[in-house]
Amino acid sequence: MGGDSVARLVGEGRRVFLDAEHFFDGSGADASYALEVLRVAAEAGASVLVLCDTNGGMLPNQLQDIVGAVVADGLRVGIHAHNDTACAVANSLAAIGVGATHVQGTANGYGERCGNADLFSVVAALENKLDRRVLPPGRLAELGRVAHAVAEVANIAPETPPNVAPMPNASNFRLRVVMPIALPATSAARIAIHARPIRLFSTREQMTMAIRTITRRRQE
Image (cartoon, rainbow, N blue to C red; front, side):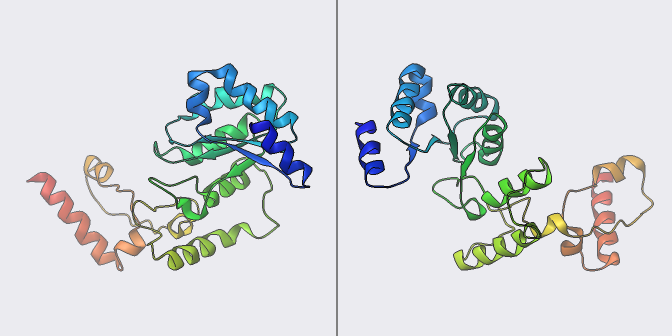
């Protein structure tokens, strides 16, 4: 039936991307059948076979093995990842690493339940970490502005959980001010909090007072 549907659309002059919903769950139950469904769709003319982690339950190493097996069968593969295990971006990159050439996701990762793969983070990782050109020259720097614009339209704060986006987040590109303060080594190490010091503390005095307060409470 899937092959017939694809063939009908291709016959009408359409380019078909088959979204194989629940593919990874289906592959876990019957890998040969799941692969055969993809083969039939490809033979009927589907341009891309999008493997969907519909439940968002896959981890990168598990997903990579399955995607790699499909790619090895000679099929053009895409990835559609949900974020229920907080791995949607990692899973998308893992799929690309073994041959996926198409990625589905959303702006800022907005989506049902825990969200989808954040395309801004995927694009930034591809360009910055894997040296793969995805955007026209000079456009990568615009991701932060676009991410915040989308968040404003969606009325969702872009830098508060569960919508903290590491790549386009303004904090990722904000200069940190290093403020040397004389403290015992153990205290200094324990209060090296991963935070946004410029935003949290507007002055050096406020930063110093906060650190002294934390240190005093630990000593008490």
